[in-house]
Length: 455
Ligand code: LLP
Image (tube, rainbow, N blue to C red; front, side, top):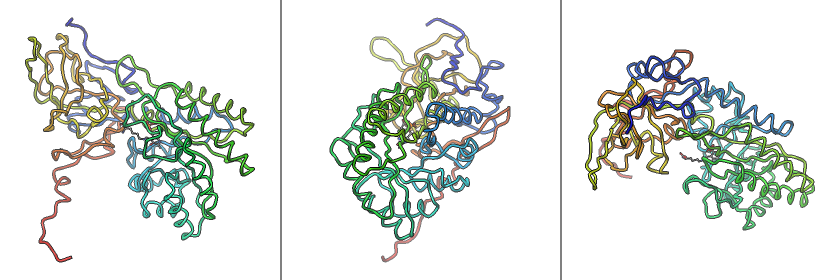
C-alpha cells in the first residue's frame, strides 16, 4: 500500500462544520482530543448548526417545490431524539413524527407543540392512543382494521373527533436492505392497496363518527436514492385519492409520502439533495393529479436519517490491535475500539458500511487493510469489515466514524452491560452534553433482589 497523507478526511461524509485543523479532526471548533478528554469515549458528537441547517433545508425545499401545496416536514424521531433535539426541531418550525409513547413523552418533555406531532406505529397501545388524543396531536396514522376501531372508540370516549391518515402499502420493492424496506406487499405495516384492503379501510373509517379521514400516508423504506420508488408510491396513492373523490364526491386534503431519503456513508457517495428530490417529486404529484383532475393535496414528508445522519460522528478510542494470519499468507489487522455493536448495530443488522478517520493526529504510515471491531463478546461485532487505515494506529488513538447520527444512539443497547455513550452537541467552539453517558449505577438501577411473593 502506498504511503500518503492518509487523513481520510472526506467532507461529503462529515458534517458541514467539520475540518482537519492542527492535524486533527475538528467539529464546529471543537477538537477530537479535547472532546474525548472532556467527555470520554465512545462519544456521539452532533454538529448543532448542521442539524438545524439540514432540517431547515428540507423545510424550504418542501415549501419551494410544493408552494401552496406544501404540507409539513415531520422529523422522524426514531432516527434520533432527545429533549434538546426536539427543541431544535421546534425552533426550525417543522413537525415531529413519533412512533411510540416514549418518543411522544420526549416531545412533550421538550414542550413540543402537540399540533405539530404525527403519531405512527403498527401496534399502538390503548394508553399510547389515549395520550396522543388527550394531548391533541395533529394526526394519528392508522395502521390496521383493529386500530380503526380502537382509535374511534377512544376518541368517542374522550368526546372528540380525531383527525387520522391511513398508512397504505403501495406494493413497492424499494432498492434497499430487506429489513428497512417497508412498502412491499408482505410486510407488517399498513393497508395494501392492491389487495383492496386500503379501500375497505377507507370505508370503515368513513363509518366512524369520531374519526375524520384527512388523507393517505406511505413510507416505502429507508436509505433510498432517486425518486422512482417515491413516484410510483405517489401515483398509487393519488389514484386512490381520485377513487375517494369519485365515490364520496369530496377530496381528501393530505398526502404524506414518508421519509427514506438516502445519505452518504462512504467517501465518494452523495446525500440526496432536498431541493432536487422534492422538485422532481412535486412534478410527479402535479402530473398525477392532473391525470385524475384532482386538486393537488398538501404534501408532507418525514425525513429522519437525511436530517440527523450526516450531522454526527462517533468518536472511539482504540484499545487493542492485532494481526491475524489468513490462508494464503495474508494477514488481517484488527483494530478494536471501546464501543461497537451496542452503539452501532447497523453493520450487523443491515450489513451497513461506514468510513473511519484517524481523528487525533495525522499519520504518514502505510495504509494497511484493517477490520474495525468493537469490544463485545461476539465475532459479528464489526463496525467496518474492511478499510485501509494507517499501519501505526495503536492504543490510545482516536477514530471518528462519520454519519452515525441516524439509528446509532437510537438503536443502542446495553449488550454485555456496556453503558450507552453520551451525546454532545458542538457549536461555535463550545460543547455540551445533550444526553449524558450511562454509568455503572444506571446499569444496575433496574436489578431487583427480593423474595418471591404469593400472587
Ligand atoms: N416515516 C416512517 C413512517 C418510518 O417508518 C420511517 C422509518 C421514517 C419516516 C424515517 O425514515 P428515514 O428518513 O430515517 O429513512 N433502523 C433502520 C431504519 C428503519 C427506519 C424505519 N422507519 C436503519 O438503521 O437503517
